[in-house]
Length: 164
Image 1: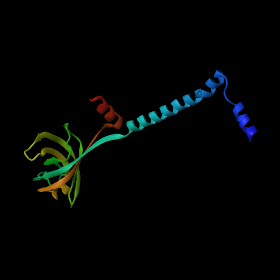
Image 2: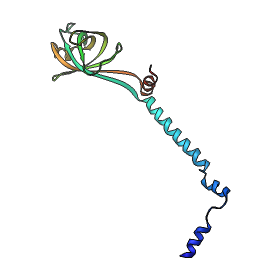
Image 3: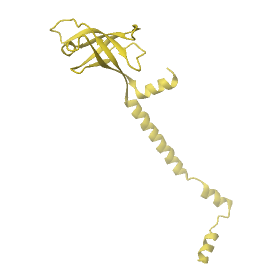
Image 4: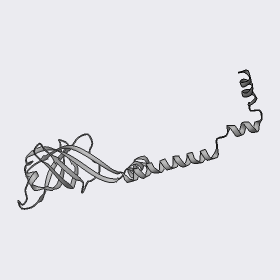
């Protein structure tokens, strides 16, 4: 047992050159480590570029009189939208909107959205929606989901990061 300890002690690093060689990180390890980190970052950026960024707004919509031809498949109607916690701060055209009631769900598109609000905080929107499901929601207050598809996640991140 004492001989074993003596062998271990004789292995002590004595010269400065040996200490510097043993204390260095191998260059291949550094090279492969930087390559691995770069590959992971590149994958994250690629995924962020490919993921679409969409904003979803919800609230209640008041649907008044629905006019239009009975033979038409879709119609343009004016609805009053009251957004919940957040509201869009840009003019929205072509965004998809989904009206949901206990009876029916109707999907349509927003043609224009007024930025002015009335005294109850509602905004007027012109929408193109299918006629048949909307007739069941006439003169009612229903829930809505407004979905805006814009850019990709990477562009949204950099626009928020750079303040644009």
